[in-house]
Image (tube, rainbow, N blue to C red; front, side, top):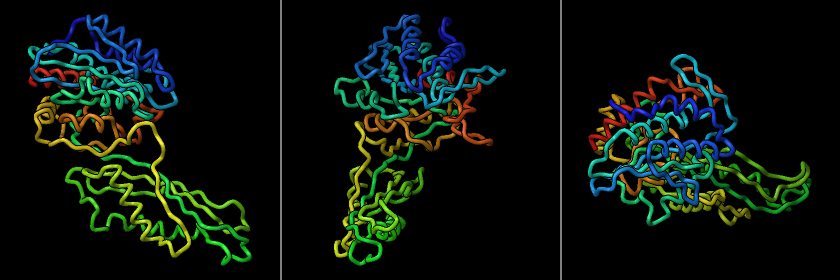
Length: 368
């Protein structure tokens, strides 16, 4: 494919990885803005720190390209090792960004429109993406298709589980451990709660297994309780991790779990039980799905030669999928045969995969 002569996605990626963006994305965002300006685009940075750019102004097909510029900590220095680029963000998600940017600059949108929307904090709270979808005038709402850049090994991902986190609180009454019956042991009530978590998916109202994602999971992760070794504990807190599947929403899960727990720990036990989500300024990334036969999925899979499958991690695609058919795609892998790649000290991406992703995206946008 023929790209804009002045833009080299590999040279861009090599520089991008050298900008640490695990704690502050300012320098990386400035580099992205300068790159777009050099390509005669007119990018803007909105109040939430998103970088937005548009090509074309026709009323034909509108495709939104999204990924993020922040990374997890710690920063890992850039290294070029033959056909491999190493360093923090190389695959998550500056490699996908380089490929998206290459296609965005290369394709003539004709009577359609291309929007590039790069967010600043996907790895933390997704305030940038949430601001985009919360603004009624945002370009994300009239997109006909959305491609979100993440490391998928050139596969096209059309669904992902959601992730909810919250705390089950048990409240009893403290007493001297020498007279345990004079109090109400909140820690002892954990037995019933853990049993309830195991049977949560067996209730009649539970969502069925998803054809792409399988079953939802509910996992206890952190427990806290008690204040002294000789005292009946009056309180206990259990943190849980929920990986949801469509069509379960966060609100539906919360109410269903509360009801299930109250049946497991009735009021007559003397222990009060409640469940609340972890406080955060943005909604949780909920489960989402796109028809695997949708045009954006089949066109991109045909161009990349990859499979159509679900994505195994939560992404900001969750926010965009309610507005338009959405897929996740990009070079790089979350893990390989040796272990973790994304978020790991050995993070890397293959140069050939970045180039292949750019070609596949360019072909797809041209066809769409």
